[in-house]
Length: 203
Image (cartoon, rainbow, N blue to C red; front, side, top):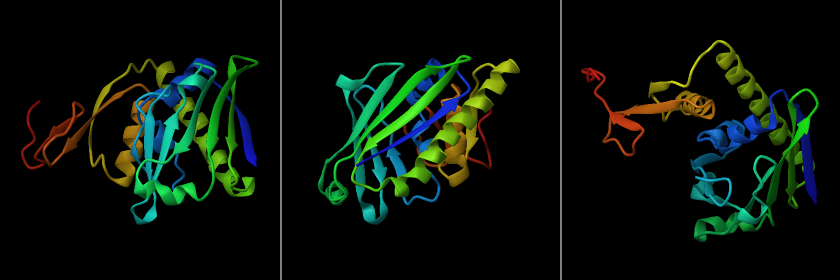
């Protein structure tokens, strides 16, 4: 069984593909009604590895296939078993997801998701309708910003790990901006800074 979902996005193919490759894309693509969260994003659409968290501490691991990587036309990921917590997801059967991007008239892009899975298409269709709408809306907002001469920014964000902050950071990074997450704990990584809300550092 499989599901194919396709739509037209009003920006060139290179921009649609680039959006998917930027940090934050996975967060933007997960519907809020699904009991699933992004634990780590793939560092590369060519051969990266993403991990999604499921209820009960279970994990969904997705590995990208270098043999099928053809920018800006296609990238493919499939579910892989990596550890005991990923075994229950294996019971749902195989999952292979091809992300396809084709030129459409007027400098637009036809974006198609082709998923091979035994999961019924009627259960998955709302997810892919959400994903396509999210991509189109985000790219439209980013295009408006560029039209207003907004150059890529460095943005400091408090509350970055909360529900709103997570989505805000993902929206900004998929638009090409750099996000500095202000955290109260010890900073971990080049894009975090420790801060004290009562006495923020001048810099």
